[in-house]
Each structure stands twice: as structure tokens, then as C-alpha cells.
Image (cartoon, rainbow, N blue to C red):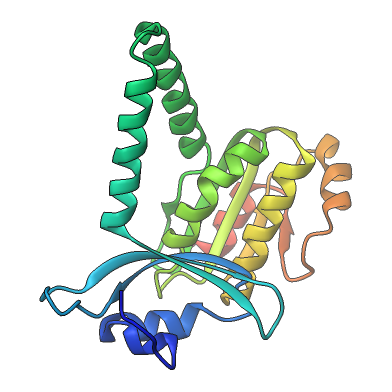
Length: 224
């Protein structure tokens, strides 16, 4: 789109430079943010993109930049191909399958809502089993939500959590570690006795604070 450039930041829109310099660092191991590239010659508006970053080590990162319009075009093309291949199939069954998948995704998103309690403190109550699919669904929205400059404390409440799968717990740990690297204080509340053993195996960062109950945490961090 831009030909050869000496530095990635040369093609970035000025409004995105401060965001990129702030968040794209080795301390934030994995990150997805929305950025804008400089307008192309035939266009006056910046090119809105999703930027995905994953650091291999302190010196090397993989960066994937996907223009929003191109992403939408690929999705549309894929849907057209699916329609062509499934003309002779049972469309009613397909629709029910899609509805079920959408319902599962929607349920996963609702399983970890971001609730702002004060300007500085947010609550993320977790519901149901901690699985890899669920954590992958909520990871990116929660990282986006906590990028508000005023947020400095995040409470994760386990009161309504059921089983904790190993893969799901690992993704949750990575999410909390990223928040710690971003300078936020992470507090975990509501761990039940039968969940303690699983939590110990995960080896959460020593920076994370554990409290017995959400009531105790709210009293400490949200009292006026």
C-alpha cells in the first residue's frame, strides 16, 4: 500500500503515534489495538486498521496490520463462497448452527463484563466455567476496555466461577499479567476453597493481590 519505508511509524497517522508508542512495548506481550495509517494518495481520510502485536522476546515482535475495509471484504468473500457451496444443503440446519454459535459467543462475552465502579476502579465478575474459548472471546475486549487512562485498579471476582480449565486459566493469567505490565493493579476476589489448588498450580504473578470477598475489596477500594 505504501511501498518501501525505512520505519513502520512513517506510515502511521499522527493521531495513532502516541497510542502505538505507549502500548507496543515488550512489557505488553500480546496486544490488539485500533490504529490509523496515513491517507493513501487517492484518499483524504486515514486508513483505519486493526494492529495485532505478539512479542517473541525483548527485541523481536510479530506485527499484523489489517485494514478494516479489507477485513470486511474477506469476510464477505468467504460468506459468498459458503453460500455457493451450501446451496444444496439443509439451510435450516446451517442457520440453527450459526444461531447456536452466536449464542455461545454472546454468552461468553457476557461471562466477563467490564463494570466501571469509580473513575479509577473497574470490576470484572467472571461467570461459569473458565475455558479457553471463553477467555479468548473476552481477552481482547477487556484489554481495550482497560486502556482508559483513568483506570488503575481492576477487580476480578471468582464468586460465580465453576470449573477452572488449565488452558482457560493460562489465558486468564496472561491477561492479568498484561494488565500488570500496563501499570494496573489487579485484585482477585471470591476464590473458593476447592479452587485454591488450581489457582496455586497456575502461579499467578506476585504483583496480583488476593482478597477473600468482593465485599471486602469494594470496601477497601471503592469507599468514599
